[in-house]
Image (cartoon, rainbow, N blue to C red; front, side, top):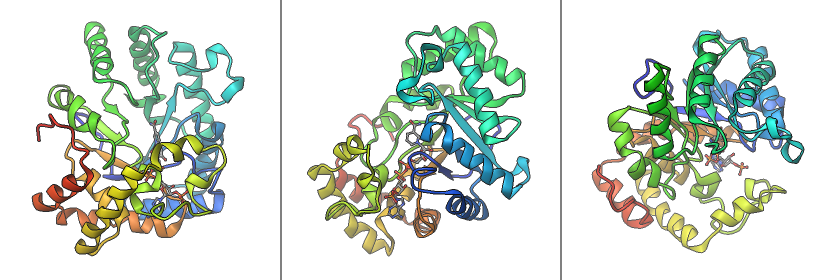
Length: 324
Ligand SMILES: NC(=O)c1ccc[n+]([C@@H]2O[C@H](COP(=O)([O-])OP(=O)(O)OC[C@H]3O[C@@H](n4cnc5c(N)ncnc54)[C@H](OP(=O)(O)O)[C@@H]3O)[C@@H](O)[C@H]2O)c1
């Protein structure tokens, strides 16, 4: 992972939206089992997912599986709190108080002694960066977390954390969790390029399928058992169900067909073809989805320069100043 010694599997599995809302204990047990048996060693979570219920569910599965704790990594993220509208001022954000308390709560819910990765889920302009870096360093010293990172921070904010860490001799963030997929490329292919070269940040990228849009499942409307049909997710549906995006996905199906694979598998393989991606976090609600998505590893070698160029020509989403 970046410049650290940590080895993350190139495909990982996360629980946003799915755990508790769509996936119960028995399905989560099956899906995490399939992931682990296929080499996935990173499971992603956050305090805010299903208001803490996602961590509890993952914790129950991890306990039942009883896998060797040294064989997998698990994360949590703090910032949003887990009480939604009932959050009081100190129950969100990146203060020492909330970062520490959210860490303790995540350890309890996940039923683990330490988090391998702990993320600041968003930047917090109300907290001095020194407070954030010191807190993460202390949590590492206490053995409660092993590595810390950021999610959806700007390049400038990440470098500010590195500056503070260097100033006080503290451990800097080693990983960022940005969105990255065929429709959202700017951070990974433009904004962060200098950081990859200098501090060597790892990335655990999210929504490799743009919440499912890149599978083609929404090309002719919204299936009843899909994410965009869920109550309370209109904002996500409105963000992605746009004709311009859908028409690109329809065209991309030709490339997938020619490669003898599915749109989902092609789209995930495309994400991990970027050498700056440490791991792509998969989200899946069904066994068939996960098995299909894991095949991205087999499709990856087929993504030569010619195929990548065709994909770029169709999607028209490559940042203009991309340098690789
Ligand atoms: N740091 C952050 O701010 C942040 C934000 C978002 C996510 N994340 C992390 O990233 C993980 C992955 O994000 P994501 O869930 O948005 O990933 P995604 O791969 O973009 O979307 C996953 C969803 O697409 C559908 N899908 C997946 N494979 C499919 C297939 N083969 N065929 C048809 N439909 C398929 C499923 O939803 P349905 O079955 O419901 O349609 C599935 O839950 C999350 O679990 C979370 O850990 C982090």
